[in-house]
Each structure stands twice: as structure tokens, then as C-alpha cells.
Amino acid sequence: MPTPDASQLPDDWKKALAAEFTKPYWQELTDFVAEERKTQQVFPPENEVFSAFHLTPFAGVKAVLLGQDPYHDDGQAHGLCFSVKPGVTAPPSLKNMYKELKTDLGCKVPNNGYLVPWANQGLLMINAVLTVRAHQPASHANHGWETFTDAAIRAVSDRADPAVFLLWGGYAKKKKKLIDATRHVVLEGAHPSPLSAKLFFGSKPFSQVNDALVKLGKPPLDWQIPNL
Image (cartoon, rainbow, N blue to C red):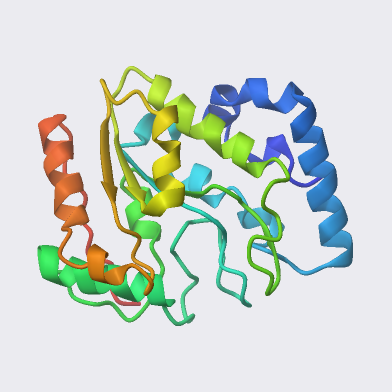
């Protein structure tokens, strides 16, 4: 089976993104990732590349959090931006998110970095690039993933049902042009990485998302990640 393979996407997202799979870039991307998997260690594992789409149904997207590149160290990436598998130490950006969550909403800092509970509530958590060669950040950038994930952002933007888009840092903010800001809420802010954490701390992004959701008539997200 080629990888990435459109059949690995859930039916609702496959339908929403159907036009992408007939475009030349998709075959080129498929060939590139398949070749990389033959000769290199690639993260996340093949069956987790589309985790974000499986955990957050297309019609159920309430908010979108954009990342850039999957984590590239062993056992970290599992298809959700900023999230790591149970038992893996939270990376610096995620630690800063937890610090801000505590200040912003009083959430306790959990003993894990597994953010699946957010995805289950309707937070689509996608990186712009969905695979990476082990220990080589951005090694799968500019091979077609960005075109695909831009299409996913546009698909949510094109829905009648409004959503909240959370754009952290310069890279994510460039995606604003894909979103119809007249119908959706776009929240821009600093990235939680240690390089920009001073600007991130105190920005209250999590309560801003919840305030926006309530104004849209949707239930707020429960941001508390439970201990495992």
C-alpha cells in the first residue's frame, strides 16, 4: 500500500479533500514518503499520520490549532501537533502551553503530554507537514504536505459552520489568507516555543478560544488534560 494513502483517511475527510487526490502533487508526495520509509526512519508511524483527522471529524471541528512540523525524536510524534505519546516527556513548547493554561484557566499541569482529549472535543490539531525523517527537522517540508494541509484548512473555512482558528507564530499566521475571517474567528498570537515564550505568556489564548466558541453558540473546550 502506498504511503500516504488516501484510503487511510476517514470517509468524511476523504470526501472533503477528494479533489486533492487526483492532483499531480499527491502522487509525488506519496512516492516521496514511500521512498523515505524504505530507506529512513520516518515519524510518525504510518498508521498515525492522519490521527488528527480520525480523532476530529470534519463536521465536528470547533477549533483549529496549527503546527509546523512533527516532532522528530523517538516516540514523540503521533499525528497531533504539539502532542506526544504517553510516557514521553513534554517538549519545551508544550511545557510553556501548560504554564499558560495554569495562569489563564487554572488548569493543573498534567503528568503527560498526550493531547488527545482536546482532539476528541473538536480541536483539529494539524501540522503543516505531516511526516519527518528521524532527528532531521523540516526534512519533509516542501514536498507537498503543505498543499494538502492548506486544503484541509480551506475545507474547514468553506463549511457553513463557523470555527475558531488559532494561529501561533509567523508560520501559522501566513495561513490566515486561507480562512474566511468574515465568518470564522481567527486568533493570532506568539508561538509557545522558548524563543517567543515571553510574548506567549499572558496572552490567554485558551480562554480566548472558549470565549469565541461561546459567542458562536458552541460549548467551550475543557482544556484540562487528565493525568495518566
